[in-house]
Image 1 (cartoon, rainbow, N blue to C red):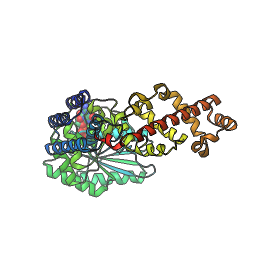
Image 2: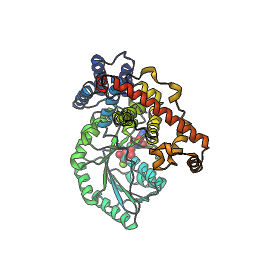
Image 3: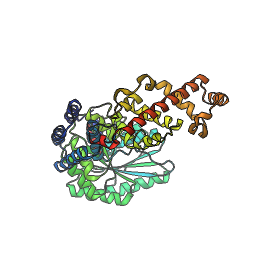
Image 4: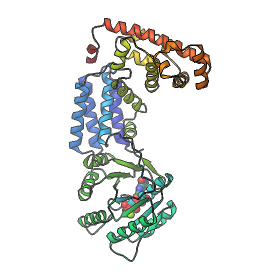
Length: 446
Ligand SMILES: Nc1nc2c(ncn2[C@@H]2O[C@H](COP(=O)(O)OP(=O)(O)O)[C@@H](O)[C@H]2O)c(=O)[nH]1
Ligand SMILES: [Mg+2]
C-alpha cells in the first residue's frame, strides 16, 4: 500500500504515545505536532490540518475518561476517529446498485486520472454482483478513446455504446443512455472526456452531460498521485456538478495520498473505490477505518477502537455495572459479556484495566477459551427467555432439551451454569468492593 511516508510518520507518532511512560499534556502536544508535520508533508491542506489537530488536542485532554480506558488508549482512538472523520466517516456502506432497475453513473475527472480504466473496473465489480452493465463513450475529444473503451467493455463483459460520427458528446451520452435503458441494462456508466481546449469548456460540457443524462451518481475519478492539486480539482468539479462519490486511482504507486484526503474533505464526497493497479480487477472498496488503521500502522487499532467504543456504549460500562450492582446478573448479561469479550479479549484483562480491580481477578476463573465461549453462546441461543433471565429453573429435563437443541453434551451445559454462578459470585464481590471505594467518578480523572 501507498502513502508510505505519511504512514511511516503517523505510525511513529503513535508509537511514541504507546511507549511514553505516562501520557500527559506534553506527550499529547508532541503527538499533535508529529501529526501536523506528517499531514503537511503529505500535502494535506494547512487549514484542515490545523482544524484537525485542534480537535484532537481538545478531545484527548478535555474528555472525561470512562472507566477502563486509559488516556493513552483515548489518545489513539481520538486520532483514529478524527482521521476517519476526515475521510468521510466510517459508514460501512457497500456499494450496491439495485437489480431490475437502471442506475446511471457519470464518471468525471481530468484527462489521465483513470476514468476509462475505472469504468472497466466498475464493470468488473458490479458484474460480480450479477448486474448487467453498459458503457457509454462520451469522450470524442481523444482519438483513441472509442477503441480503448470498446475493447475494455468486451473484456469486462459490458455492452458498449459509442458514435464516431457524432462530434457532440452531450448527444452521444444522451443517446447511449437511452439505448441502454431501452434494453433494460441495470448499470450504465458514462465515461467522459477529460481534456478540452480549456478547463471551462470541459466543465461546461460535463454539466451539460449531467443535465442530459440525469445520473444517479456522479463519481469523480481522482489520481491519487497528484498531491495538493487534488483539492482544487475536486472543488472545480464539485462546483460545476455536485460530486457524489470519489474513485481514487493509482494508489499502488508511491502516492502522496494526502492531497486526496483534502479533496474528500473539500467536497464531502466519500471515497467509494480505490484503484491499485492498471488491471481491471485491481479495484478495492474503500473503507476509511481500514485505511486509517493501515495509515497508523497498527494492525490491532481496530480492536482498540472497538474496545473503547464498547466500553463507552456501556456493555461492561457504567450501565450494566449498575444493573449488576443491584444483584441482577442473568445469563443474558453473561451472553452480552461474552460477545463483548470476544471483541475485547479475556474478561480478566478487561477487569484488570478497571481501576481498583488490579490483580485481584482470579485469572483461571475468567480466562475462557474462544472455543468454549462459542459453544456456550450456542447453548444460550437454545435457551428460552425464561431460562436466560432466571437460570435457577434449569433442571435436568431442561438440560436435556437444551442439549438436544444446541447439539452439545449435558456436561457442557452444566459447565456453563457453573461458569455463570462463579461469575455472578465474583461480580457481586467486585461490586461490593466498588461501593466501599470513594466513587467511580474519581477514576475518570486519570
Ligand atoms: N498503476 C495504476 N495505473 C492506473 C490506475 N488507474 C488508471 N491507471 C493508468 O492511468 C492511465 C490513464 O488511464 P485512463 O483510464 O486512460 O484515464 P482517463 O484519461 O481518465 O480515461 C493509464 O495508463 C492507466 O493504465 C491505477 O489504479 N493504478
Ligand atoms: Mg478516458
